[in-house]
Picture 1 (cartoon, rainbow, N blue to C red):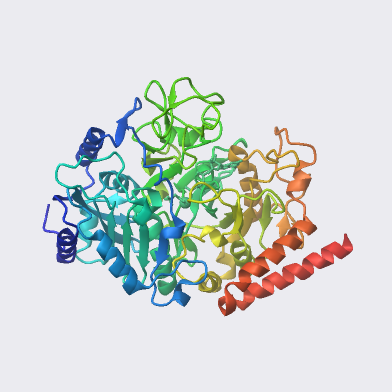
Picture 2 (cartoon, protein in one colour; picture 1 turned 135 degrees about the vertical axis):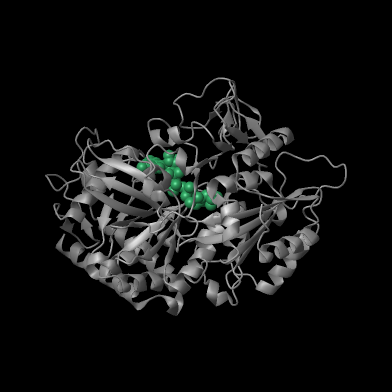
Length: 602
Ligand code: GTP
Ligand code: SPV
Ligand code: MN
């Protein structure tokens, strides 16, 4: 290896002095290094080799299983800069506090130096980071999720990098035996310093808490840089949709955690002749291209996907993606050394070991699921059989439509087209969703999650809304993406899904394509443009066996439901004070008066 950039070398020295690791290892992202890390992790008992090729199972500490939003802080200069939707922490106090925790925290462990790129190396959109960590599992995962290694390090002779300081917080005294998943859940803290920018994460080895290129850099710090520099960092999947006639559209979709991004990005359409290609499943960086269009890249290089309910029926391309070279975390283990999770097959195989390593017998009173509900797989995107070659294009793909969504049992239609860019930004700002196992805390509680960015926007949410309006204003009207709000999660009065979802979501995408092509007309309603219930402008439901009246219910304007929705949005907007853009307050008032007119007419 050539000499590392002085700035990186200096920082590595400082952290080495402070954290006192037993060794330092500079990672190059090579296959040999992967094999070596896997071997080491198997020896320690962190990874269990699986029957499928080059694949392993990790079991985390039961207290370290998801993002911890309550311990994630934004350390901007003032609390106002972070805004009411974030946990703000004083930068100086947090630095002092975390420094104390980091002191000696890597004793007995190896410090891994992980130079990485978010985006294709050398592209204008790409940003760089260096993560220092004492977790070989994190080193292994970062090499999958990012473009990690020598090529990224070489860029740092010229390009700036975001320092990402990470420790498990589990120093080893001489002779002390290690545990399979070291961590310090009681003292975990994930701190973001947008003005440096820098990321300090202590105590957790799991997912977004520890793989710092992902939510910390690409979204929380990314969103701050994007606002300053005039681009967008979003919690979005990216896909290319091609019609039977061969016309292709690019769609971006923001749904909250565990609400269907990966599944939509890998969609296997049930409508004959339609194809989907995957560009990204979680994060998109968007900027206005030389052609005046909004162009998006996927800054990641891997998928960190939800395992439960992934099956050959629901996501065959996902199943193919994880057939080899996959690190599973917190799934169940089968008797023949493979993985299993709820929803993979209708019946669990006999002889399962649950995610905590205990023999698992379904039906035993008090026994939980075999796989943790937030069990995940980590795989390179190049494993995906429908990966679009454009995933690696630094210019990005031109976005034709933006989808927002969430997990909502009632009120929100299957698909709703925004009346304008402003109305589209309004729809994004009003997103609410039932909470999921992706984050610590209760699940199934509806909370406002604007643009699916509630846990990921690194600055004031009102200013973030304003940034969306400004980006639209910079785009020619004819080049602005159209905006849709979708909801796959409506339930009937019997508690069953009204819409089959998954591959059948292609039917909704096809309707959107018809709208983009100008060949499909819609019903203009108080809440937006909705599909016809039947006829040639309706969503194609041929071959589906839906409950009677399901399509009418999925595309109706539920006046009572929307009245409650408006009250809830008004209360949420009020928390943003005078940083709420006037255009959005106006959109809310206009929706209310349109709805009142509908109620009167109806
Ligand atoms: P993050 O990685 O946390 O950001 O999640 P995600 O948005 O990528 O969600 P993902 O696609 O992994 O789906 C999460 C859960 O929702 C899985 O259990 C899926 O099986 C389920 N799901 C996804 N799409 C659908 C759908 O169309 N209908 C229904 N009923 N469930 C779905
Ligand atoms: C999410 O929670 O939105 C995820 C998983 O994609 S994590 O990387 O842990 O944030
Ligand atoms: Mn996500």
